[in-house]
Image (spheres, helix red, strand yellow):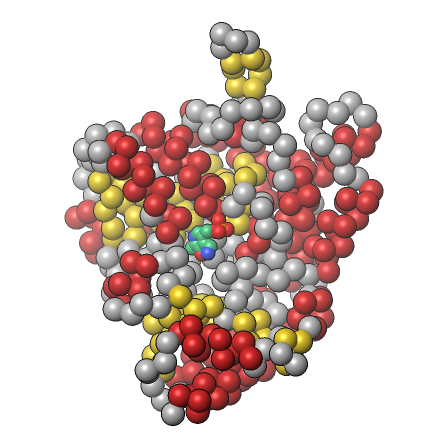
Length: 417
Ligand code: PMP
């Protein structure tokens, strides 16, 4: 991509009015109703730009990468490595060498826990996370703590779903070896003050890992400005394919880290006595990677970069405000997660009606929302609910979608009267 995405951001701002037309699935009907897709926090839909790019790549440029001397393999390799450059530019890494391709956020956090974490955390040490983490930023640390006889600690939150940062200092000691924190909560929408948390981490010489699964599609991420040591996101939540994600790590740290998985492509030399390993990022990409996933992710990045985060941010903030206002007018509806700094995730409960029933009835009206614990059971426990219904916003949503949701919720209430 070179500078093209940045140039495009400046030169054109796509009209979000017509953006739905870029997504073929949004033209479909379900149960005879136009699809109102409000589940982008689970996964975003894919624009033609991504679908066509993958299809064209497979038709014209695909071969296995890195190993081939023939032209087609070199072309395919170049597309894969261009994707790495695109990701680096997208999140403002210093160099593409700081970008590791892997399956997604879950695999990224597991990679860090099993390499960096395992080397850094010892018996009696502590790992600090927040009380609003997705299970994928809890369980890998729990497993590590179990193995090392270390302790997992959590930064508490207030009832509006914002973190109580005043408690961080008292939770940190010389035993704290890592902080791993979600950028945007998938269950509450809260945008956490990563820069402040990194600053606290730096003061105590504690590396900070950021789970960017819910932020990368909605906020401009600048890892150098954030100052974090690691940042991970998933392709499928930024309008790209599933099966691909990216891990950013400061190069000095990546270089220190042992391999995660062993196999082809990550080695320098192998004998039965001993193997030596390549430098990062190759060291962490054992085996044939998701080549078409990376190429599709690069197309997705180009697509959202053309729209630009100024446009995306304004659109989604306006829509979130509208949704809050409309939903709060429904009697018996309570929004869970009302932090001032909030992204387009609206979790709610409706008096006397189970979220699964709500989501099932909404589906009959063509509305796709999620119901459950959203892989954040401790968040549900904190708010004293077994589950919530969650509507989440993407670039293609508009006021009409929110109106459809509100009207369908009235319908739900009618049924349960
Ligand atoms: N963290 C957060 C905050 C998430 O929302 C998700 C996905 N719901 C994940 C991590 C895991 O992402 P993935 O399933 O793509 O690995």
